[in-house]
Amino acid sequence: MRIILIGPPGAGKGTQCQRLSGLLRVPHLSTGEMLRAAVRAGTPEGLEAARFMQAGQLVPDPLIVGMVSGRLMAPDCRDGCLLDGFPRTVPQAETLDDMLERRAISVDGVIELAVPRDELVRRMLARKRADDDPEIFSRRIMSFEEQTAPLLEYYGRQGKLASIDGLGTADEIFERIRVSIDRFRRRARIRG
Ligand code: ADP
Image (cartoon, rainbow, N blue to C red):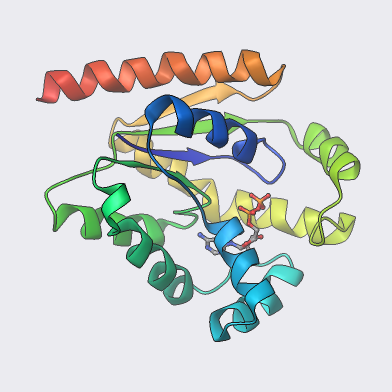
């Protein structure tokens, strides 16, 4: 299965993706992790991306698309993958649809982890990552609301969106995700 997880910074995508990757037995592709690895390694992409990440902005689409497309075509993604942090803009989603369509495959379902803003800020203060400075964090939330939230409508129109409550224990949230996955599976079977 090919599943996308969408949620604002601090929604808990990383934690849930790790578990979900085990359940679905497909690789977890996190663009945030890939970018942080590129920054650590000091590659040209990493150096370019760092400027945007430190400012709480999205990195340019071509950079991210180049990085993900190679990874998506790798043999371990043949039976599916779990996308975390990509797509993050409507143009990225359109590019992804094109890439998959060329191989006669598609996204099976999109899960939105919905978490209110005050809870996101509370979690950020408790976790502390380099780009988790309060001011930068609020810029990342803004970029989510302006650039990523429109994706919910995009996938809603395709009938692929499941929005779930991101408040509760990690176990409770995972259970909600599992229910959505079952629904995606049934739908995929009907489509045949
Ligand atoms: P979070 O979801 O907590 O904001 P991520 O680890 O997913 O964090 O991403 C960290 C940063 O990496 C983002 O703030 C952004 O600058 C960059 N980034 C990750 N994925 C993308 C993407 N698909 N397009 C543009 N920038 C991205």
